[in-house]
Image 1: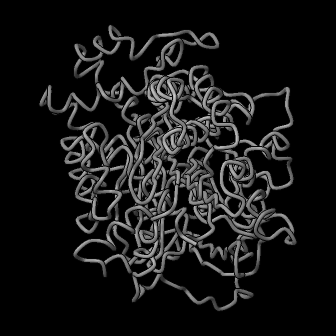
Image 2 (image 1 turned 180 degrees about the horizontal axis):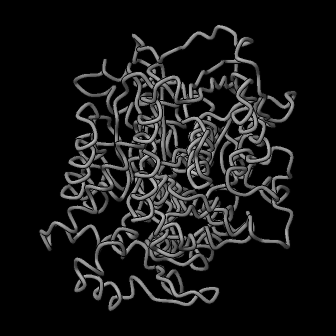
Amino acid sequence: MLKKFLERAKAGEPLYINDVCKSFNGLDVSERYSMHCMLTLLENNEKRLFDIHIPRLDHLNQEEIDFIKHYLWADIYNILSGLGGIAMHVYIDTDHLDLKKLINELNDVFQIHKKSTERIGYGKCINVIDRMMRTLCPEEPPFRFIACELSEMPNIDVATESNYEDASFFNKVTEDLEGKIICGMDIGGTDIKLVLVKDGIIDCYKEYDWFPALFTTSNQLIEPICLLVRLLRAKISLDLSTKMSQEKTSLLSDVDSALDKDATDDHMLEVISKVEKYLHDDMVEIDAIGLCYPDVVVHNKVVGGECYKVRGIRNNTSINFEEDFLSLTNLDNRLQQYVKEDGIVRMINDGPMASFTAAVEIAASTSPKIVTKGVLAYTLGTELGTGWVKGNGSIPNIPLEIYNLIIDLGSFVEKQYPPDDIRSINNFNTNLSGTIQKFCSQSGIFRMALKYFPKERPDLFNELLEKDYVIEQIVDGQPGYYVPTEPKDQRKAFLEHMMSLPERENDETNSKIWRNIGVSLAITYLETNKIIKLGTPNLMAFGRLVKNSRCFELIKEGVKSVSDDISLEVADASLANTSLMKQLENSPHYTVAQFAQAIGAVYYANHI
């Protein structure tokens, strides 16, 4: 079995972790070691039990032992990336000395005793846990692994997520919008989308492109966000001003130009400054700001710090990262200055915002009761965001960094490339290979284009080069393929091009790329469910990768090829059931697929 796995991996084939798990679990008891991992969660001292089985190590060569270790570490890493935790007790038969040695190595593998700046690879999930613990349970000692004798294992109740009877919470957040001005903001890795709502009516939209991974300080992330809120506040303040003058007419025209998608920061700042000077003390105070941010968020605080968007900041050796990141952690405090004295700033991760948005719309549909099962949402864009809202409206305080989960233990050919090379399956942040980040995202689309086009469709590969979507470049002495981000960021254009090809070409190669996204997404769901114990939630897909109907149908085909039991729905115009979402659906310029989460952020801010 192990020899066949390694042969496939060396040939460049994927080895999905769920298939490896199934093979190991199917071994006879005499042929395997068993570990019973009891994880203590970050809140309420809740316990979760995970049973992990691996082949016995007797008579295996070093390559086979290394593969088994990689599987074990990946399985534990996935659990911690999904749930976080205070400690993990691992119960084993300590008479098996080689197994005992494996477990005793875990604190070193995950670099428990190292500083956050020194951790790499598997240790990155411990950085997130440390920051979450400082917010949720600062009195607890640092996370650690504890090896225990099997006979000492306590009885653990295995809980599964239950359904709830009442969906009224999701209806209440859509009510009482009259008399309020609320800003909703969806912050992504490629763009930011905002809406401003007054008296339950969408007043304006704003889209802003950026590339935060290039930033080297947290302030470079914070300033554009504040600038955009100031712009929308300036717009509504000018609209509501009773002053009548030629200057006001001119300023209204300036504001319209600043709301344009391609308006520069300098132009927006110039317009905002003019309006603020003109109105002086007559600037309107916003009632609430709701936003989703693409990092781990706990109690309105950004506490992750290990995602791709802050890579440039993490790699900046001229600053103290933890001190600098603290300003991003307190983004909610910065935004508080733009709302009323008793105003609200509410922030969650973009994944939970997607699930919350879907839940609100489902609750307003003709079948509201199904929302009581909860909603799991995936946002397929720059990376994969994941959100889970329970049927009672609560959002668990867990990392849910599903994009970091390792799903492919093979593809040895593609793991030889550095992370920024389009062909690589290595994670941008951790350098670990086979994570979802390089499968269910625009990086996955780009990677598969470079995997299949050169051999199967060289004409399409040449087209990518001719249009400068892909460039060949020498980095650290090695030739590779990269997506240009300067002077022009080609990521959006490259993705739009790839989304157009299934219909334009009507060929198997392009269809295969999008089906593979579906295969990866199905495996992602199976891993998520194994870790989180979701019950039977509604499964929704958001983001740029699913806005094209042909591409989404191919994704669904890929999902069904893995499991007929997974039902995936897209967050498109069919999701528009509430008043604000229907207004968005009727917009001649914007779509539900684009701005749904910004609308959801308005409802999230309206929740008191």
